[in-house]
Image 1: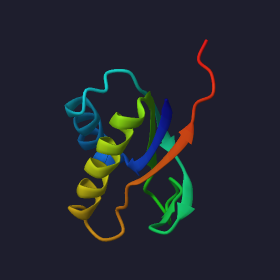
Image 2: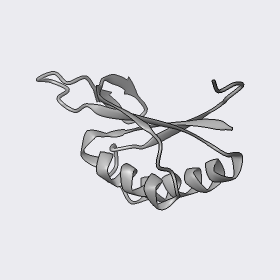
Image 3: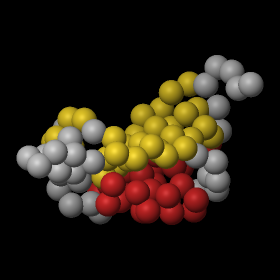
Length: 96
């Protein structure tokens, strides 16, 4: 099992939700109003840097992880420059 953590612009959260649903993922957690700074710039929710991000994470099989990452990469290529979608994969050692 793997945890896939996806950070996307708030304006793209519906796109990400649809994408994970299309890949058979029906269990996920979403945290809105995420702020930070990265390769695509600052998203701090301030007057100067008004944008915010969304963090979506889900735990899926290795096979589903691979197909989900490919779909996210395809999604990112369709975004405007600077929008950015990032995905991180973490191993899951135990589920209780």
